Image 1 (spheres, rainbow, N blue to C red):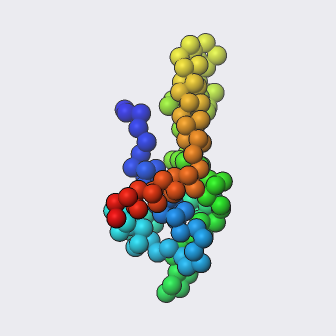
Image 2: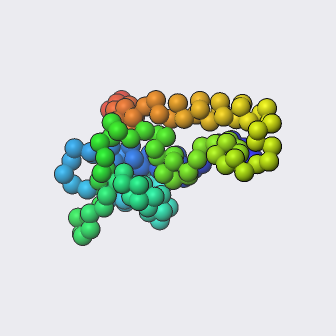
Length: 144
């Protein structure tokens, strides 16, 4: 096992950054546009957007000119929110979230795993989606 952020989380972050770039636009963003810009399959993107919609971070608009909008100000969404929405807990071991382990109270490594989780959470909460969208916008400008 590798302690890595999943492809699903990375793609969700990229899709949410695209939506944040268009946050002030009245027109919804179509999944095809996000898929093209981010090189993600539309089918996979649909699966990724479902938990983000369930958490209330995105909303859909139906119809021929339909698509997705951010439902929350991008300053109020962090990478941590996105990770939790699509993957759940960021704990490196299950016993950090579930004290059902019979060794929970006498395991010295549990404290290390807790610090790993806390450090990851801190870093994932350090930048808002608006911050990341600003950096992405600057990157797009520098490439043109």
